[in-house]
Image 1: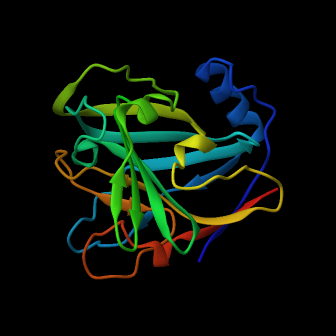
Image 2 (image 1 turned 90 degrees about the vertical axis):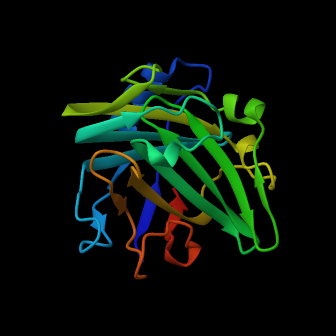
Image 3 (image 1 turned 30 degrees about the vertical axis):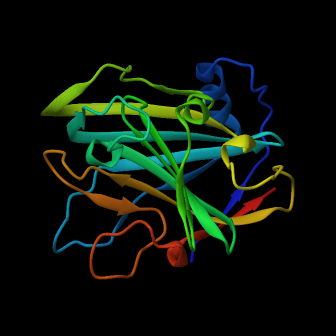
Length: 215
């Protein structure tokens, strides 16, 4: 299991996301999404990495991706964003369940809670309360080959973890994984930060989450 130590950053949540992206480049920790867990079925591996940092009120994420085929047709909150070129963050704060935050490359987002006895999707309002921006813009993109590099940045307020009351603070630990996928892209792929040791693609496996430590 990988461990990631996440620094506290000097970022006012009211700042424009582009400024926060610049702060993340200087102050955050970087991880690489490079685990091709099913090479026989899905060997394709786009270049993907992430940066993350926190304040007491929010977790900040910035994904950097380079891929040679792209798709982004979902525009509705909680839609099938995983079928597009998609970056994902799953996290668990205790043993009651985990959250999945999935965002396609034009910043359409899904937010869900997966408990042991129930699942729940966030409301559109809750999703819209997560500021996010993509360098590809927000207009749909049909499946196409080419040379695509993009950055996807988001600020996740602690209120987004709607089944918990938490505050990000030094010494806090939780578990998480980061993913790059694209089920219906021209080159389907399922790549992760922490390896997933099962036979078929499935990101909803909290037993393979890595450990996050807030510094």
